[in-house]
Image 1 (tube, helix red, strand yellow):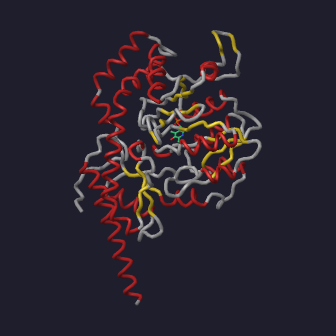
Image 2 (spheres, helix red, strand yellow):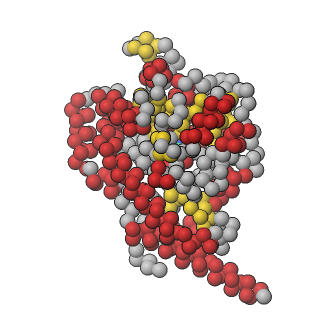
Image 3 (cartoon, rainbow, N blue to C red):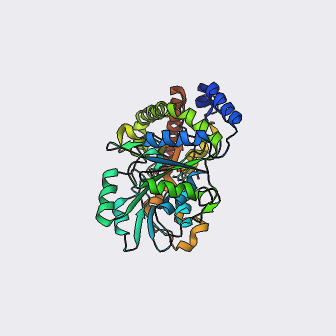
Length: 393
Ligand SMILES: *Cc1c(COP(=O)(O)O)cnc(C)c1O
């Protein structure tokens, strides 16, 4: 292996920013000149453009994705006494968002192949108090819209999408943000559409819910100094909106790049299935927007995930784990009362998953270097296992 190769970072945003540097500078200048830093012109413009891109009627910009989940659910009428179903293997923000409404979160297991919420498990978790389900379009792949709709109509449940990893993702002809009563997006810098700081948005179809959200994010004021809701201060900054508006026209192209990178990984990784390494399955074809490219290092592999990750680090390839501990085993959420073993698939995945470098601008050479390195590390481990077997024999 060539050890002089440069570091391959897990995420590198410089490619996207360089390609539109002057447009970004101009957008930032424009906000500075106007001086409308809070709820300015660019916020409204971006809300309309992003909602339209999602196939939703309204967009309401908020401070971050976590607030988008909490305020979005609240505006849809979710609160104390309601049960809300969500997957155990998500970023904790999904759970925090649900808890902040006062509702009771009900966690369920995932499908081990796609890592998406197991809707059969969700169905079993429904009680007379269940009001909503929060499907998380994890890693950039939608939870099946058709199956979600079936569940929602059979049991009269609201669907509120956590689309923080799925900007413009599609499945069965539907787009993230157009499936449920509402959807939450995050514009954290490394998301498929990222700001230069925090940002988020709720997209909804209903005008009244949109109005409630505009009030909730702005101290609960329906007009200036007249407070109809117990709201908060959670607004998308005008500067961030202007940056996001500038990036939005490029998102389709950047998502395409991600898809091609994923296809390249898929092809090169194929032979490693013999060594127990499998990519998380894509069940949505070209609609997957690959926020993350995740492989499973199963117990058929001669080395474990942790060893593979540190070997890659030594070869200057940075990787991530999304996420190492499921929500129900986080110390902060002990009071929910779930024990280890409650969600076996989610727990096993946490041990197996490894996110490989993925960002627009990652080159073919870099992709090849990542897979070559994994192959070398794994085959070396395999021959060691075999020679140990020979020694024992
Ligand atoms: C990033 C993310 C969030 C939270 O968004 P923030 O903007 O960081 O608050 C919520 N859910 C999922 C699945 C995410 O990936």
